[in-house]
Each structure stands twice: as structure tokens, then as C-alpha cells.
Image (cartoon, rainbow, N blue to C red; front, top):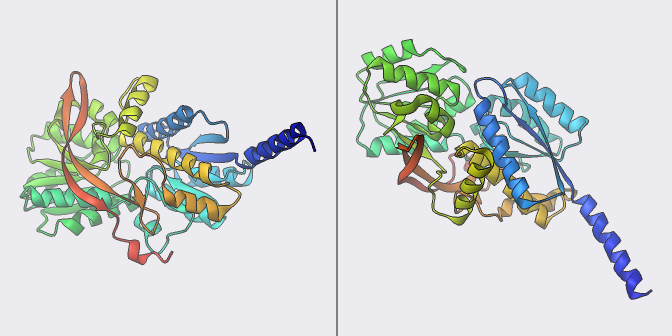
Amino acid sequence: MSVKTLLAAAGLVALAAGAQAQVKVGMITTLSGGGASLGIDTRDGFMLAIGMAGRDDIDVIVEDDQQKPDIAVQISDKMIQSDKVDVLTGIVWSNLAMAVVPSATAQGLFYLSTNAAPAQLAGAGCNPNHFSVSYQNDNLHEAAGAYTKSAGYTKPFILAPNYPAGHDSLTGFKRFYDGELAGEIYTELGQTDYAAEIAQIRASGADSVFFFLPGGMGISFLKQYAESGVELPLVGPAFSFDQNILQAVGDAAVGVKNTSTWSKDLDNDANAAFVSAYEEKYGRLPSIYAAQGYDTANLLLSAMDKADISDPDAFRTALEDADFDSVRGDFTFASNHHPIQDIYVREVIKEGDIYTNKITDTAMEDRDNAYVGECSM
């Protein structure tokens, strides 16, 4: 066989390998309604990483779950059965994740979470094909509990929505704040009127307030709280103080402390490149949802560089390696496929006309999660 023939044959093998390596991704996320900004940022961060990588071996299908579990399940079924996706990702809300993820992973698909990471999927319900690239739901709230205690507050009032992430939130807070509570309530998911809750806070004798209200819920609460005249200091997770919420709330949020695994001022090369590219492409600063979407895409791409999706065991190992430059800096997976990472305290500030956050302290170093021991993997 001539050298020319050998080279041609090698080329055909390479083409075949390339065809085998094509990965089809189904992104189910919230693109309409009160939680739309969270899903839009998730999608935009994910697609920015794909675009920056210049890859042609990945195909991404994006659909709107409308923040409804039944719609998310319908989309998932279609993506698995008709679109033949290899990987699912993108869900923001934990109740939707609980409706989709167990079924998807049971069918052999990989699920890479850009956000939702309920306790049920970290502990006894863990699965080798499920990876949370964001955190475990309790984490940011654990850090808020630790900060509340270290700041000297002795009687916080705590509230969150009545859905899986809300329960994880208050559980996490109380894990690291073990003092007296002035009150503890669960609000309706999607609620926009918080007059009754603010009245309870006013009458409770609290010295501080911890709240977890993502998306439009947080905007409504913060505006009403500012107008109420209650002047107790607020503490919350990053979800209640992301870029979109801050621009809608304005001065009422300035000075509030919140906990986060990511901030635009984190000092590493990957984060600087991400923030610059995101702002240039979309004309706005990224949020934690965008950062998590970006990291999820880069984790996936790093696995694709090491293994073929048609070999699930090898591909799973490649995901576990987490061989990518995270915008959060050091990033590894715990044995239940949830991150080990630092969690920071941020303060809301105003830079020119833009409301944003800056890191003021580190709340936790190398935090994994409370459910590792319950996972049998």
C-alpha cells in the first residue's frame, strides 16, 4: 500500500472518529415568565463557551420549560426519544429537576446541572450519570448561615419559597447558624406580594433577615421591603442579588451581603476572559447563572476531548476529571458528583450606573456538601 493510500485511509478513520464524537445536547431551561432572566443567562453562558471553543462536534437544542414541571417532562421525553440527545442540561428550578433528572439518567443519559441541585439527587438519589456543575442546593445558604453567625446576629428571621430548593435553603442555613430564630416561613413559589411576611418580620423582634427568593420573587420582596421602612439588615444567597435583580431593585440593595461561589471580580484568567467576552457579546454583565452555564459547557467540552460519548464509562471518567479552567478557580467533584469549591461573601455596590457585587470575604473553603455520605456511588 502506498504512502498516499495509507494517508487517505488514516483520514477516513479520523473522519469516522469525528463522526462518532458528535455530541447532541438538549438544553431545557426557563425562557419565559418571571424566571426568564435566569434561563436566558444560563443559555447565553453555555452558548458563549461553545462559540469561543469554535467546535463543530456539538449540537445544542434549546427549549423553554416555561417553569412548569409537566412541560419540562414533555420536552425531555421528546429530546430523548425523537431528538436522540446524549446529554441534558439547563434546568434552573429544583422541582423541574426532580421531574426530569431521575428518568433521564435511568435511561442512560448524562445530565449536567447548570443550577438546580436538590438534596435528593446528592444523597440517596445520586446517579453516576448526574453531575451538578453549580453546587449542592444547600451550599450558598450554609455560607449565609455561617456569615450570619460570624457577623454577630443572634435572632434572624428566615424565609424561602415552598419547593425543594427552598427547603434545602433553610436547612442549609440552619446547619451553620445554630442559634435562635425570630421566625421561619415558606412562601408560595412565584409569589409577588410579601406584605404579610414583612409584617411578620416587623413584629418578630428579629435583628436580621435571611431570605432566598430567586428571580422575580426577589425583585418584588426587595422593593416592598425597602418601601416598608423595616431597616433590619438583609443577608441572602447570590440568587437574590444577581445582575438582573440588582438592576430592577436599584439602591435598595446597595450594601446587602450575599454568598456566592462566583463573582465577576474573582481574580483568575478564566473568569477575566469570560466576563469580558460575555459583556462584549451580550452587552451586559454576567450573572452566576451565566457563569455556571459557561462552566458546564467547558466541562462537557473537556470530556469530549478525552473520551467518546459512545463509551459511557470512559466519558463519565472524563467528566469526573473536571479538566477545565473554571471561572471559579479551583474546581473538583466530590464522590457524589457535586463540586468542591470556595464560597464567598459579596456586597452589593454601584459602579457608575450599574449595580453589581464585590467580594469582601471567604465564607467557606473547599466546601463539598452534607450528603456525600448518603450517596452509594
